[in-house]
Image 1 (cartoon, rainbow, N blue to C red):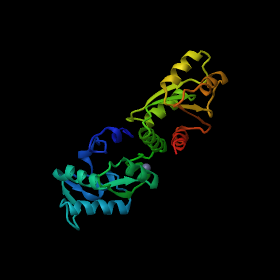
Image 2 (cartoon, rainbow, N blue to C red):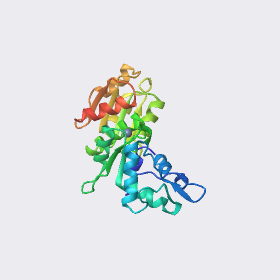
Image 3 (cartoon, protein in one colour):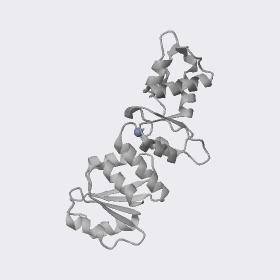
Image 4 (cartoon, rainbow, N blue to C red):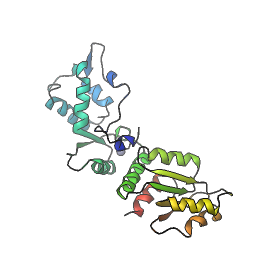
Length: 239
Ligand SMILES: [Zn+2]
């Protein structure tokens, strides 16, 4: 559920939670507020204080009360999720601001621990992928050819791009059968070609993509390893 929610076009940018109804619920049908907030990801004192203030200003609880009735659970969740955004730091805050449509008031940011960050969900790859996907969307780039890397890393990149309108074609840099014809077709199709020099690349394969690149197609060479670094290089190339 990483980035897809951000590109789904729905009004809520928060993915539905599986066991939402059980959060903080007590046997008596009451919901302990501290537990509810902690389990909802407001896991720092400041974040919990701000979320509690939202519940109070929404009339869902009053100062000094420790619990509310379980029937208010959905309303409480909606109130805090529409008023506050949980971020782990400035990078995720900047992404939230970029994701906030023009004319919509940005939510108040509260800093939480990394795993509770609703932008990156605690994953550097997810954050970098979202950043790259936003950059590509802004530049109207949808078709990307990646030369090099392994199936595991390609999967990681696809996960990082999850939900974004990006088609990724991958080329095995060690292939002995990847010929000029395939390379020409990929170059004609691509809007962005990434030659991943940090991975095993046969000279014959990479050369296909370094020469005769059609005008208007961006070609970049990335010499760093890992999905996060690859995504960062994409963002930098458009700066
Ligand atoms: Zn984050």
